[in-house]
Length: 455
Image (tube, rainbow, N blue to C red; front, side, top):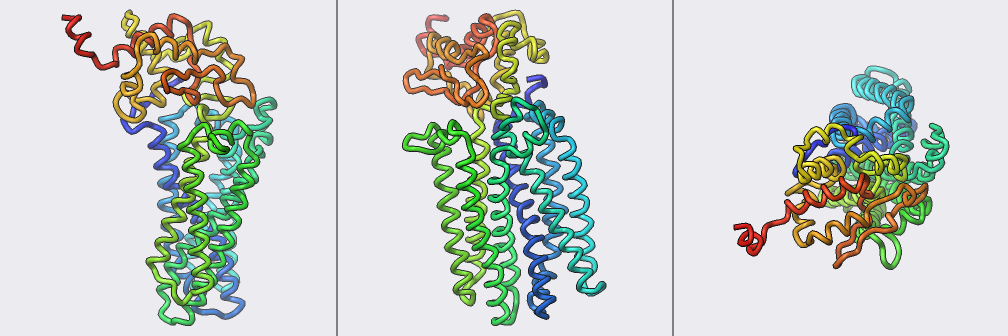
């Protein structure tokens, strides 16, 4: 709202999702991989298991490439995309959690240093010293997850922070611990899946079966922990959020479908992990690759569900997806939305349609494109002038509807099968609303009758 909208045909939210899901899959492997390798090498040193230690050695290079290279690049990609698509929300997260971010960046530097040292010191230092390096890496990587989880969970369940604005109330929010348990399980089973691919390269059949079974333990335990964490996460959510995807008639059928997908994918993954645990000699790379793809599906499904459950907010009960704060609705209804979005106001050309275009840019363009993702042209095509005005009227808010803990606009429009409960409310003056309606009408395709009448 305070900054110009970055228009993308694919939609800014879709771009963020693509970059973020790629990053979290890699980052969770980096976390789980550190734990799995630390445990594996500890067991290998104590038992004198050369095959298990060689597995850690084979995996260490990929851990560096994934964690310190791809993880770092994709992490920067997230900052770039969220800074361009949601600059106000990004600024809010930085200001509220600046010391958490600073701590996480220090931990990431420790991750990089210990990962590089771990890989470079094979057979050059004593085994105990080498173990110290991988355990330091595992600790730094997991603590990064501990910190980031607090910030991510805050966006969905800010909890008491809405009243207190306390760092600790925002960080240790209602969904913090359940989400941390869930992500810990995900990190473990992702690590077990990938390392199984490396284990299958072992030439000795007996050793290969032993390694596969050892890693299957991480997969089974991880899947069970993730399932328990997910169920706990659901319980921790406010009832209004659960109503989006739970119950006989969920408010968002697409999110309900995503929930079913992630749970069924997690169940399928658990079966594949049990197969590796009980029949390690039969494990082959196609089955392992399939397990990884199923794991990615389950994890990606959870991320989509978590993001979608914030609708229509970017920070729930605090900031809408277009950057309007709940606390400023009443004031903006008096002053007008363009008093805040000065950059959009400069696009006015003196006409009602020009003013409406500026209002659209300020209030709607963060989600809707003209012809691409969530195309506004397709949305308004079947709607006549009176319906457009009626829908906008029904989406107005006086600053009282969106109170703490509320999720849905109680007066949302339901007109001829068109349902708009998950859009932010219309905020602005009556003149701005009429101007927006006039602009939306210009986007409707002209009918033959209208063209003839115009001639």
